[in-house]
Image (cartoon, rainbow, N blue to C red; front, side, top):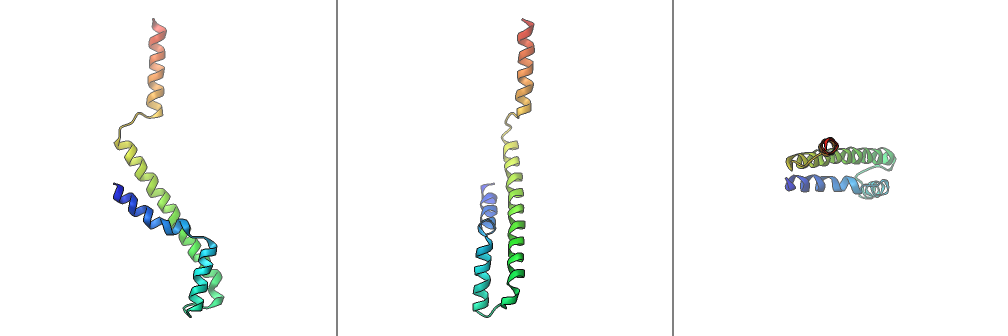
Length: 96
């Protein structure tokens, strides 16, 4: 289970740390190496940021699902369970 979380976290770290400034610097490096043309900067940056947003969203979803599975497997009392028990206890105490 923790290996899965580690993999998800590592996969998403790049997306979480991606900023527009970093994407622009990355593109500028491509231009200086002759791997890209300056005119394509806006499209490249937008694509990188969109990809980072998608990855970030997917990572949040996977973490949420993993946490939910973990909590469920622990068989912890839910807020509703505790509320129900409190109501039952209140009823029993009133009967005395």
